[in-house]
Length: 183
Ligand code: AMP
Image (tube, rainbow, N blue to C red):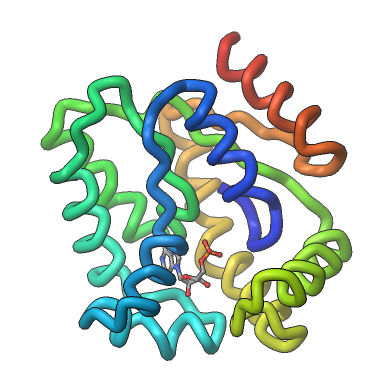
């Protein structure tokens, strides 16, 4: 978990590679659905462009589908999900039904100024319609309002939350994540 621009995608991919397990990133899946112009993609488009969250029911259906097709027995990294308490509760039900549980929630903490700088840079490189200055501000607001409560929810549960400062080199941050997970 972490705000937009915290490095979830970068760090999640490295972590999944290290653990040799798949990474399921709802943002990536939604972007692919848009490119392929599927019904899901068409449904998600306007929310994504506005920097809003795609409705919980849509995202939960998507995750159910992804995990149904999951063949990995050694787990998976979820990236960018859950983003609301409703999604977190949905995930808890889903995991319970599968007889699985979360090993850890990794929270990448990055100051707002740094996030805005990173997302502006990413907008130039990746041509993401949701990385314009106005949408970036909006997405940070959505994060504070809808997603931070998820972190509080996990902290009050018995899931272990690993707080990692997401500033520094990619390699150092990844090393910190790996050592904290191994503890
Ligand atoms: P991301 O690549 O994770 O930053 O996601 C890009 C956009 O996809 C977000 O701004 C949302 O519009 C949408 N999205 C991705 N994951 C979720 C989620 N778990 N719940 C709702 N919307 C999501």
